[in-house]
Length: 499
Image 1 (cartoon, rainbow, N blue to C red):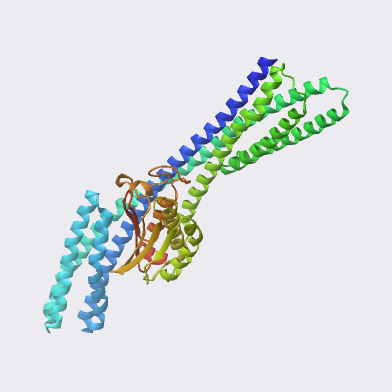
Image 2 (tube, rainbow, N blue to C red):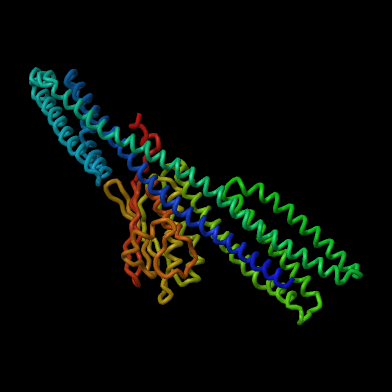
């Protein structure tokens, strides 16, 4: 009998440990899926931007040509306004194309060819306009009749098609890959949830059977004790209700990853409460020092099982935080940005105010080196970006000296740059890029966190058409720089050239 009970205890512990390892495996798989999805999303974003820039260049060349023709036909200089605007904008569009094509030899070759075509087209347009302004209208029209400008435009259209067609094909490939990732995520959720259900259900069933046998033995010894029989009956009813809850839990857990996780957390609490009741009941029993089985049962109920339950609770809590973080990144990717005039001075004063109390407790001062420039962007995203950066700076203060955090900002050439500087621990040079990756952290891991905040910041900043970088020296502090456009393009403006 004693050997059988020892076996039951070992099996229960093994079941609980198996559930914990299953959760760990799901966490690792979720991290891998999130990283892969992020890589695919970056590629899709680049291809989309490349296609938009190509369409913009064609539109600008056409605008310039339309302005030239209107002027040649009417000699009205008002027709030169679209020409002048388009000619000025072509260089920045070509520079954008070159940045997007950086690293791809074929795309760079096409962009270089487009540079030559754009230069030749602008030269042809400028020559005809100059002749018209000099009063040599016939010569100007003669140049137009040669068809050279039309051939240049046809060549530009073909080159842009050579650039857009592979981009569209790659977009289709990446979208199919993202669909495959979603399918894999679904399988991981379903299979992981089913496995957790089986493992936890088996462990609970073993524990239930073990508890039931123990109660039956005690009832047989004290058959004449009506009070004890009543308690056993009540315990049996409670266990039956718990068993009913397990069956309902088994139905819900098959749907997705979150449902089984939530139910595992809830059931762990129920199981913990049940163990507490069993422990209390055992404590009320007379202690027989010669009964090794009873001693082992007491140890299992008071030490081994609570330890295993605590391990499961910490694992499920961590998994829940990771799932929430991944969902937040996903929702940010689909949330429609709403550009509006934003006073960065007022916005950052509000953000800093929410951290004043916490910073004061840590002997840290937060200063805004104002006045800060204003911009047109998404207010909620900006609050989340700077809130995460301030939280990160406060979290990693150097306890050896009073903390100091300074926020600065400046504008120039259509972009704004903001800095969040601190005198905290600092970050090693090899980790400057790594800290922006999902689930990655640097330095000594003595602060709570999952390696999500800075990855979230980079995702938001890039959605705002910006970039975030860091300069840091260990032991001296860090400076996080955020570059943003002074006016965030509307979604309709971004997609207009696709049409």
